[in-house]
Image (tube, rainbow, N blue to C red; front, side, top):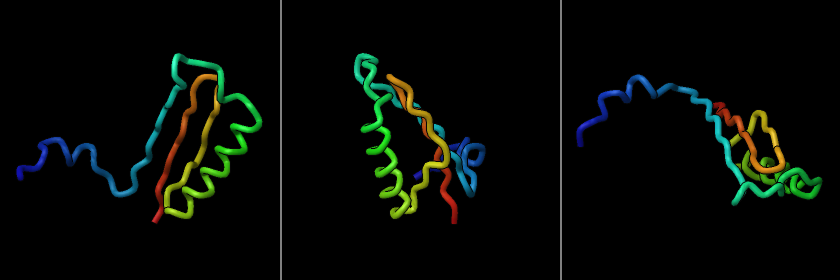
Length: 71
């Protein structure tokens, strides 16, 4: 299988991922204490699988995550 020509430009040893997710129909759902507590628990579980959320912002209708994997 031929390798993508631009792969060298986008592949780095320790990538940083920036992810933005929004709620369906942009409903204001995320800005609640229960949602924040569940999200923190999710992040702790993810860390056990070697996935780390470095910083995050929970807005009423979307979330922004900065993920950094360390070796």
